[in-house]
Image (cartoon, rainbow, N blue to C red; front, side, top):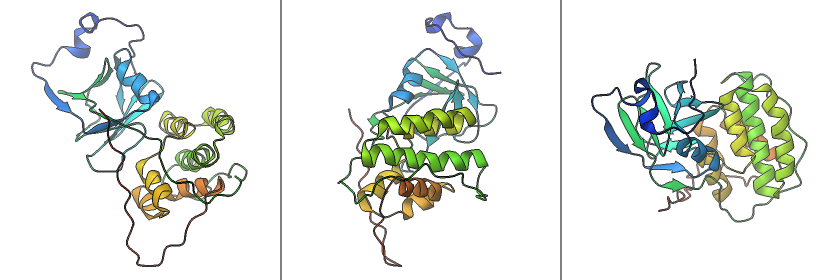
Length: 248
């Protein structure tokens, strides 16, 4: 069962089983974390007990926090730090920190998940793309979410159509799970995984396609929103865009 502390008690007022049973705590400072308000609300809000969803993901209420290894592509819902989650790891978030078992994680400096890029060659956005039928690399719900996330991000980043993206989001949230809904909510704000930053900055889609099994669906969504890709010769080196800096 997922337990949430929805009021704002002091840490000492929480049950000892939540925060104070460890005889020792190792303090870790993450390399960075997304500055998205969606993530900040979880990190800075009341203390919550979460549920581990996999090696990299933790659910707090209806929001999923993703941990990424330092130097790996960063996520708009992510904290960049070394980690080793297991299904039995006790995880907490709130009051400016994460607890991962016996590790207490300071989220580190923020980075902006909204890309900055020169205006791209775009065309008018098309209609919302149909479901990604036959995509076998992930569940139908996750595949559909990746496709719609790319589309909504394109509406916002390429055309400034936040209201239209919000309309797509409202319908999509009725038929998806917390992991997918987290991605969709970020995309509707123009907050995207780091490989999308590189795509918009360099025009090369290969880092996005290689980063995740659903990368090709993100790309299809962006193209449906009007992104025009520049052709890249076979065998050409992948251009590298500088990582967005963290800010003090």
